[in-house]
Image 1 (cartoon, rainbow, N blue to C red):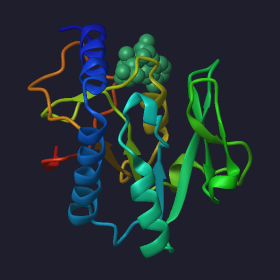
Image 2 (image 1 turned 180 degrees about the vertical axis):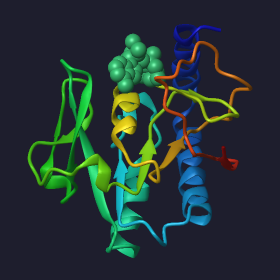
Image 3 (image 1 turned 30 degrees about the vertical axis):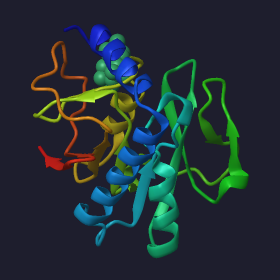
Amino acid sequence: MTKQELRKRYLQKRADLSEAEYVHLNFLVYQQFFSGIDLSLIKVLHTFLPIAAKREVDTGLIVERLRREFPHIRIVIPKAQLLTHTLEHFYFEGPHQLVTNAWGVPEPNQGIPAEPEKIDLVLVPLLAYDKTGHRLGYGKGFYDRFLKQCNPTCVKVGLSLFQAEEKLEGTTELDVRLDKCVSPEGIISF
Ligand code: ADP
Ligand code: MG
């Protein structure tokens, strides 16, 4: 299956989830994340903020608990540059900082910029992933460009409501691989 065909399939899989399934699968991902990801050395954590209508993993649950129980971890969120397909990054201060962009993504409208080299762990959005850690995004390469700028020691953690594909086809050396992926069933390390 080509990248484009697989994107279509996974968008459909998401759309087919009932609201109750979506809420339940999100909760399992949230639980797996906190029971299986070592946060002890993490000082700066980058996360996407989800488009709920697109059934992305609801990182809001994770962010709330991080802010409550891990107040020493600084949270960074992206702002998309739609023309260049690149991301800018800002330290997250709270909901007051957010506005919804043209694609329905909540983003910071101002804040203190964060350098990719400072980030210890990135929560990576995806449509599909495989058993070797290859990842399929929405098709614009935003995260491939961003993850390339991070330190080699930065832990790249995919979040998915679904299981891994056996092998993604058509990946290239520009596709940055994940180190781990959290799904409702558990965490795979690649
Ligand atoms: P996605 O990762 O969102 O699924 P693709 O991997 O298909 O999307 O990448 C989308 C486009 O972005 C491709 O044309 C790809 O070559 C380009 N791209 C990916 N990473 C980079 C990069 N580091 N520098 C420049 N172009 C890139
Ligand atoms: Mg890619």
